[in-house]
Image 1 (tube, one colour):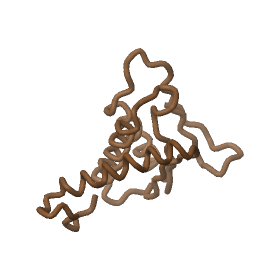
Image 2 (spheres, one colour; image 1 turned 180 degrees about the horizontal axis):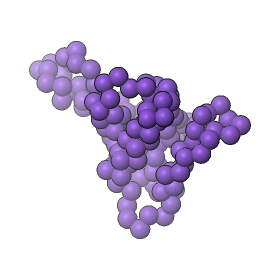
Image 3 (cartoon, one colour; image 1 turned 135 degrees about the vertical axis):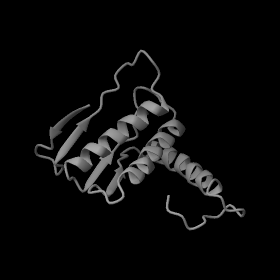
Length: 130
């Protein structure tokens, strides 16, 4: 990961994550690790927001399901690690309509499975924060 200034953009910093042609497959654990590192670094720099694209879904062809699970899991872990984080606004940046629809579909599946895992018998959220 390389961090540069935002230059002429409206961003304070740009985090460059080059997965390149990994000799090994881009895994859920790798994506989660990368997202968590970005969030932790943004928080330590006092950034209030960060935008992250769906990592690994471009040239590496990582399935969207793996990307969504990893990214959301990292965001949840970040929320657990930092009870009062400086970086509170986390946006998933998607500029392609097809990628957006695929991400949205997998997000809804993930969110519904999290509700079912929340411990309520009726499958509805039990009021706990996720």
